[in-house]
Length: 247
Image (cartoon, rainbow, N blue to C red; front, side, top):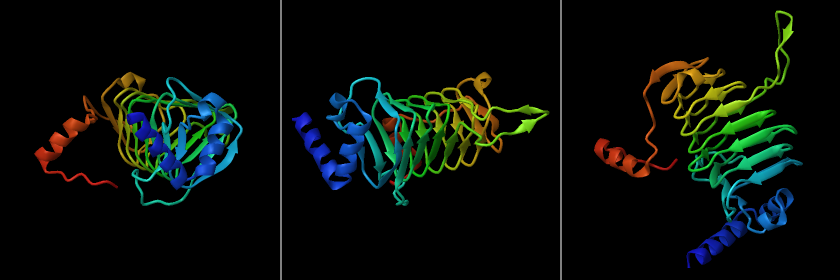
């Protein structure tokens, strides 16, 4: 019965949103046996700038796994999601992706999304020329930039700096809105980045449970973590009389 309900829910999503683009994208980007399951769906407008690259799944493939343009993630914006995929995107499991995101993966780029709760909010820019790895159970809010290239060459003391440098975001990280994650950034597990920060260095030596803020971002606090457990969060809402409202 559960499988039947899921099947009809998927059909409803397809026919109420982007049926032609959903079918086209899956069969364009995935092997036939994966594509027929329609693991990637679009809930709102989407523009394909290029689909010359690859999408890979690690693990079991199910219908409606990757939900792009989900309106519950900051529904105030209505511009289309834009995809330019000339490199490779890897998904390790279910993932909701909000509206109006711009995702570019260049020819030699690798964008690796974690699973187990990883979410991407609305109106973000992810630009990958080398490698961007986002861990498990990460929360990336809205209006952020994650860019592993500087686009233009810079000479310093007669030395040309490399354009690209990988970005590694560990597990259970929380990126506040309107932050920029620049090339060469490494965030250990359980990192929190304050809204409006610019992160541009390797913080591996700081370890887990750290809070970063500023332009450029600096270590501000240690032994700090976000509460991810939904049930614990509800209890805290009751304790502190917080009325949680969908955006």
